[in-house]
Amino acid sequence: MTARIFLNGRWLDAGEARVPVMDRGFLFGDGVYEVIPVYSRQAFRLEQHLARLQKSLDGIQLDNPYRLDEWIAFVTQLAREAEWEDQSIYIQVTRGPMAVRNHAFPQVVTPTVVLLAEPMTPPPASQRGQGIAAVSAADIRWLRCDLKTTSLLANCLLRQVAVAAGCVETVLFRDGFLTEGSASSIFVVKDGVLLAPIKNHLMLPGITYDVVLELAAQHGLPHEVRDVTEAETRAADELWMCSSTKEVLPIVTLDGRRVGCDGAPGPVFARMYDWYQEFKATVMRAAA
Ligand code: PDD
Image (tube, rainbow, N blue to C red; front, side, top):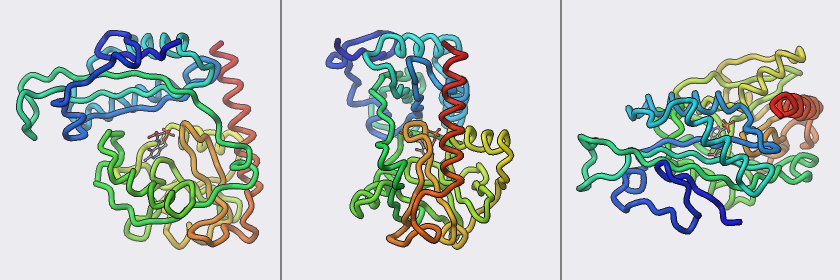
């Protein structure tokens, strides 16, 4: 079966979908996106992802081209028809094409809307069992990291720092404080307390981040949402990264130094991992 792509209201075979060179998404990175995990053809936290899409659109002053029920219908159709049971559904909305290259918004905006599905494979068991290596870098991004925009060059450069060092993720610090990862949210565990940076303009309000904090509250795991310093991060007992596609993963080395005393995934991670899987299964059963 050929993968289907939604482009501006039409379902096309992947090879047929074309976007004009003058699209502002291509020339300026002028657009927003979402990545929605789908388990057994059920979109996980769909309404939260679509609410964040709305916030990102508002943040770049672009009218939402579709109503909520229309978005839900598109995602549901794609999840049902794509060839994989578990998928990550990608949505992108750009400010569309312009007649001549001009930074100012066009008078009449015709947004470009793309939806596509990709197979979603969980991180290898070795990453969960043995943990992953991360490096750190200064957070060189702009001051609206709360918007999920397609202008991702800084994130790509920062992720490449990890790749060049043979690591999985780059943990970002700004002015001595933890912000997030190049494409993930980061949590610290210290003395049995889960620490999460405050959602503000310096980080993406992660959907998985919310799930992790909800599970902590539900299971009575002590947690604090507050500024987390770089020193606290480096002295963590446990360090986790999380995102829609990776769920929650333990970071066991940061810049080549072991996290905690033994550099192995910690006991709090093991509990959170189980809670997360249990929660996913319950939600998916209820939706089926
Ligand atoms: N990225 N922070 C950044 C900068 C991210 O890019 C992501 C996810 C997250 C985690 O957000 P969520 O839990 O809502 O997936 C945090 C996605 C997966 C991506 O760009 O592919």
